[in-house]
Amino acid sequence: MHIKNNKKISIIVAMLMIGSTFVGCAKDKKESATTSEPKKNEQAVKLSTKDDYTYESNDYFTSISWLEKNIEKNKNLVIIDARSKEDYQKGHIPGSINVAWQSLAQMEGKAGDKNWGTLLEQDALSKALSEIGITKDSQVLVYATKGAWGEDGRIVWCLQRVGVDARMLNGGFDLWKSEDKEVSKDISKNEVSDFKVEKITNDNNITTDELKKEIKDVKLIDTREEDEYKGATNFGEARGGHLPNAINITFNKLYNEDGTIKSNEEIEKVMKENKIEKNDEIVTYCTAGIRSAHMGLALKNAGYENVRNYDASYYEWAADKNNEVIK
Image (cartoon, rainbow, N blue to C red; front, top):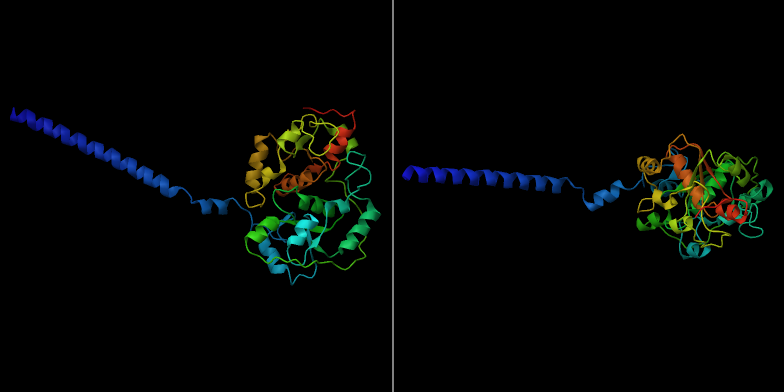
């Protein structure tokens, strides 16, 4: 009887020891998992490209840190605020001038008319750029704000088409302000220059007639919001819907929360999810070629070289009843 009791006690002790070992392992694993998770502020740092680009190292974006270092000493620097006049007057980056994308576009008639909203012709564009104070030596930095329309991208797209050295400010005015950089209410104006547009390149643009011929051979990206893609006419479009075979990727899907552009790896992931490869012929469009111009530059920055912006965009396409639209 005494021997049996000893055996029972031994078995119970052994079971308790094994159980405590499992509990200890589970606790270790839990603690390990907890300590390996990045803190929220560490994640925020990782999800930003705010210091990744300088004017010298990148053709499409430049950091606010670069701007801060060059804002006073760089005599060739032209800073453009692409926001509304009202927002500019409330406060802007010191020395910046307020330029609307419309001032560089053909705005005669109404939205949907042939060539409405497309880039000005050579002489008119020369006059517009000389009034801004652009010279052949200018280094132009354009900024806007997150949650807007990508007006900074549209202006840079325009300037690069005529050979002006231009970039977008990565993170825009929101990031500049959130980092407590200087904000001014002084209205700036540059001296009028004698700038002349010698050539307008068409390698990053496509017209309606060209798109009709190539539509089956390109990957079309509709950069508008989902409700627009599905048929909403929020801005006076002649018809609702989207172009045949267009893929809906909203242009701000390529932004981080702080307004900076996503990393090339993250953009590539978004594109792959939509079956778009780097060697594809890509055409971006929106309502009037603003959001799509921004995405076009962002994709070029990420290594998608064959990208063209359809600047006449959905306004012109939908206005012609001979053009097919899908809902």
